[in-house]
Length: 336
View 1 (spheres, rainbow, N blue to C red):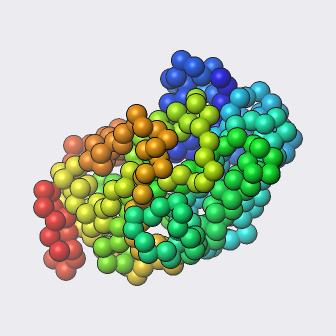
View 2: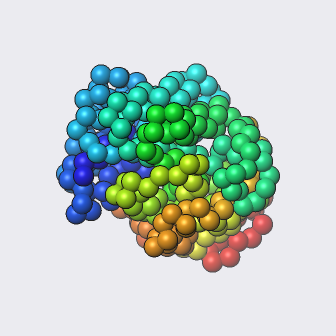
View 3: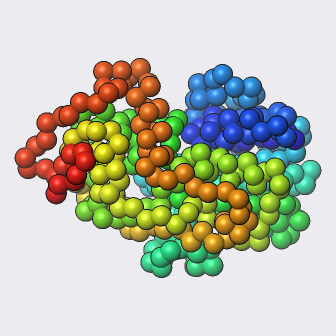
């Protein structure tokens, strides 16, 4: 089997490419990426074929889809704050780009897995969130991911295109970038701690998330591709954990053996207060798979960060001074 991964040089994409190329049943793995947020270095040392280009390029899509048996569509313009700054760009890549990928697949009836997001639940307060709940996006990003999954399901209904839409929940792990305005919370926290800086918490820190290790995500998607799993509705790709941002900081303090200082800022527009997946549909489709526990996933992620040259001076951990006027997390106990 030959597989195309759009966004294959990105954080999730590169981890998935590495998982796919390790499977005996997989021959070629092609990563299509414009490198706007991904990096060729993420695929270094693998046999993955990197094609630099955009999913908005219809001719290029025709060429790369023609040579594969399945497509995993991960290419997107990520981040809620980024979509608030430029809603049209998020729509163009995430919605229009998805339709162009679907069209290339439709012409050959090529199996397609597409990435949606838990953000589509938006203001719906029910916990855990199951796939039959209404969707009420709070940001242009969330709306564009709802368009992604809706188009995939519509193509399945209208054209018989085989596919599966996954809703990702706060994926984290090695290769996830830090050090920029739109960085996710786990790499942001680790980066700040290793640089002896305060960890910025938006809001009171009691908001909760269902963190999912990227290795778990990669294994589930690889199994979906190999078995060409389909479903008539989107599927939550998370295992029903619920951790607050303050608890996450505590876990990292313990994992890194560092004193961690917290700095609170105002809540961000478009952020969901609480997120937790109902994993019933996922477990029904992938009965043999289990999730990597949070503490193990964080340990692997911290290990990867400490292997990077820019953190060489803090590979074994140091204890930054804490401001007496701020909240802090000092391993192994959090003080507020």
